[in-house]
Image (cartoon, rainbow, N blue to C red; front, top):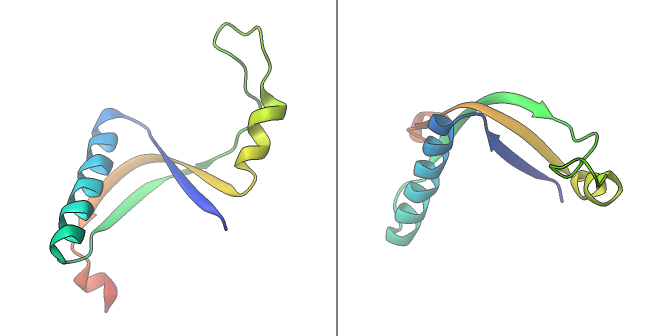
Length: 87
């Protein structure tokens, strides 16, 4: 199984992603409509990982964990009406 992980590029995008998740949970609990979100961004790759102080290279431990995952830098996100998208 592959996963897609979103990294918000800024606070506004993070807020929209959080709102979409909250809306999804609310609708799921009430048996309501689906929640659709449009995300614009670019795929990221992890080449190396070092601690903030730069003393430790964690590349060998961290990079393999992303082998079956896609990282996307979410530069823009919007919550949309799903009905037109599902037709």
